[in-house]
View 1: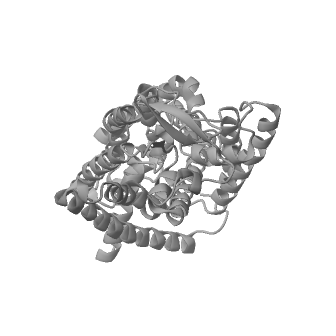
View 2: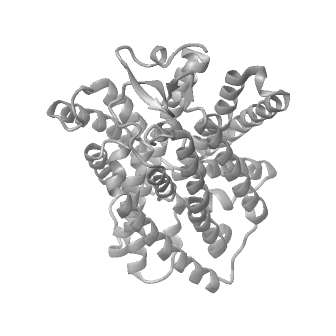
View 3: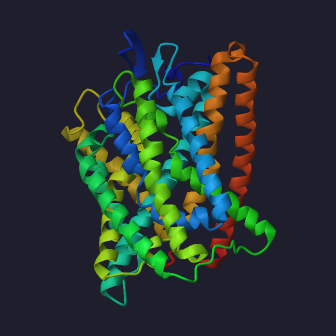
Length: 446
């Protein structure tokens, strides 16, 4: 191997001793809890996390550019591929007597310091953009509620700021993934509430809507291809996060088997939820479905308020799951590891760390409020390599020729195809951003 996790982490981090599978293992020091949660808890967290406010945009982002046949086929294919890739990555949690609680540590250990920084950049870019998308969706939900009660709603930027403040408060007082256990029941109830209410209205609207059009309206053939690639990137965002080792770090032993069971829960019960909403929204409104699904809903005012309110409240918990690795890195660097998370010194440092993250994200989100662009760019530039390319590279490096010729061909095929997909979908995402930058202006009130 190219180095150790000690080489790829910041200086001054001491290695701790664990006891995995009856034998010892080492892992780098961290300010956050490790090896504390059951696989059922982590599985529920994944189901809730992926059935977040993002699903309110997926009908437009995933189904409209593809249509029924290609849309359903891509949902199933990308979902199955993401499940397999994450299942593979979960098996790399222990390598050469070390437990890798960070994706960047794993890649740095196998390939060296440069790969550590590449993984760090891709992960943190993904997490920051994802959090900006959450802030934007939360603000959209608040503005939709405001619109129900006034004909002159406040500017979107005020709701972006309010959403950022609420997210900051939750991240400050619930600092780690393990600490989220006390909020899972509430978040699950909120998820169920807006899913059921949303499905009921979608079924009613779909039955009454006799003018549905499912044709792909995208102009030239080139535009259709670019939009389809963007939809594939959005489907990947719908299914994976690029931070599986960080989530797996909280799973109690046996961590590999436990994480794979949690993934099974995500890609069955969880996928039934976010795929169900996405397909139902497209079925109900066709290619005219809005990029923010509640904008299309008929029915009483209280239903729209309920869906937007529960989606906003649920997103407070969900967004934290996808931002914790950034918080963990800053907490481990800035806090005193021999003191508790709620010591006076660590609380003060955490105010600065969380404020820096959310202050930056709120400003950028208010500046560029283009909802679909966040999703497509995240899925194309970072999630494709993090999900598909890197795990196969790691398996080839670890197993070498001992894995067999068929195994090597299989993983090389994944590397080549995923690299080509990364280039194509990134080009489509950049094109979308360029087009929207010409249409909208900075601090647009959308």
